[in-house]
Image 1 (cartoon, rainbow, N blue to C red):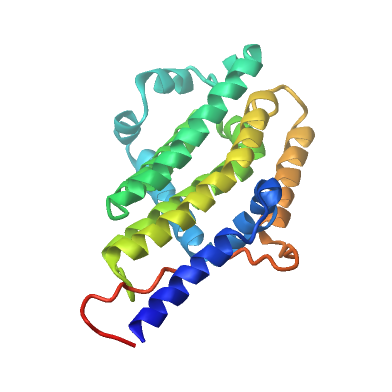
Image 2: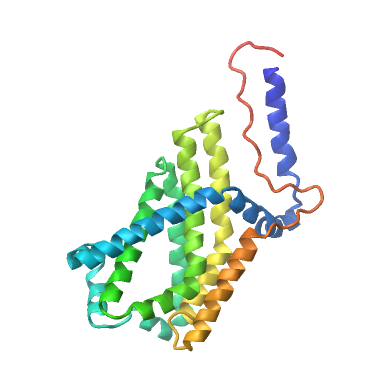
Length: 274
């Protein structure tokens, strides 16, 4: 019986690995596999988001209570800009093409780190999300104290409705890997981790084009002098796009099931026979 389970597990992997034609695999991944994997792990994404905003609230209220807290979190240059009632994002207007590339690269680096550091039993991912949440809340409070809150929100919102969910999605991949290492469940720790790493990789890869789009908006729209209504419209359209793309159940093509392969059964360890 054990040998039969092994054969079924191997056949399952072979079947699903060859189910998608190569010429259509990338299109199918971004239109079906990634959104499906996102929805399947929505509860983990929600955990990442909750952790971010909880730590953001901590940073916000601690800064309002004691300015020295902000001085521990923010760089001296950033603090100087805020105290001079200046937005540090103004310089982006003069180097838009370069800024777009740098922003996209930085965003992709953060998302990959949020995922990859999950190998440390989820602790690395926890640190990335908690620290960035704390940083965001601290900046929000600092700009509020110096009358720059409206400008900050107008800068963050147009691209943030895409960028922040991407970070939460990548962090979900890190937490999934950490959970597999801490609580292997039915299969061995190695097999569970391999399955979790594949799921996490799908989540991170799926965010790549979204981060490029966020980088373009952050370089060309967010710091611009366009009317407030235009920037808010971009924000609403970007949010609607994300919702429709990630939450709308796409129809699978005949014979294609966008499910990650199930972990194979354990190899028989002794002389047990079917």
